[in-house]
Length: 336
View (tube, one colour):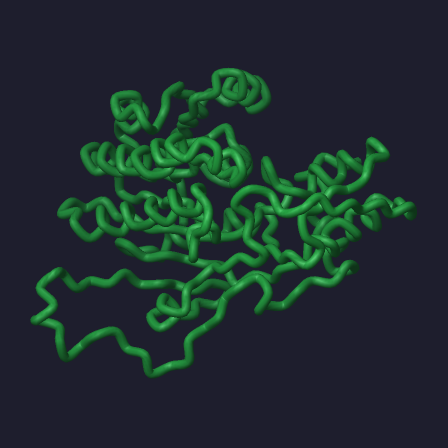
């Protein structure tokens, strides 16, 4: 999908996705303008100096403050909504902050975007939203419900869809940069549960998923990648091998607040209405209204076997396979 002549807004634009997506756009596309919206003035200043591009504009604000979205959304064609609290332990201690940003903030972005007649909004979600057990996952699950509700009730031309994916390697807060720093400082790599599994996805694939959703997505649809996973202990060992350090020191510190042993990208219930599109699944929204009598003969088809799409049920990458993945994203994790 071409961004030629288009104005793009990235909320949470100073985060990992915002930085990567901006770099993708300015290297490949003849865009009109990219707007970075975030509440961190220091990160904005650093990003402005690093990018040094007159077609990249910066707006300071908070998605919880609807008024601060007024100016950034003027004449925008596409919105990529990445603003979120995403650290599980932090959200456990500050659940209301997660609610304000992840749920109410999303509502504000969508309402203002519809008001400004934005063509399309892609909202970024997480595997934590599936069968959630922590505040971050619950807030993201509610975010998805808000997006789907807004998309179905929206009578304007704005199209709204969702991407849902797991851990993005080398993104801010992910374990790989932490593990590398610990090894370089001659410290033990600290893991919570050696058998814990997580979906594995490079940032480039997260960008491709978002672009696919932008091009193909319709109101209320959720797009999910078909992605492998890995055990935490194997990720730790692969970091040692990647850095060519033989003295492996791994310490188990126990599960943190709100952590699950395995993550899930799609519920069994969602799998009944999921369709495969090459590297992705698409989950269509339920278009029925509350007058169920009209649909009593339809229901939701369950004539196919449900898919158990959890991180312990997919292909688990071995240590050598993880090393190859790390080698591919070497520039992302700033390892020379």
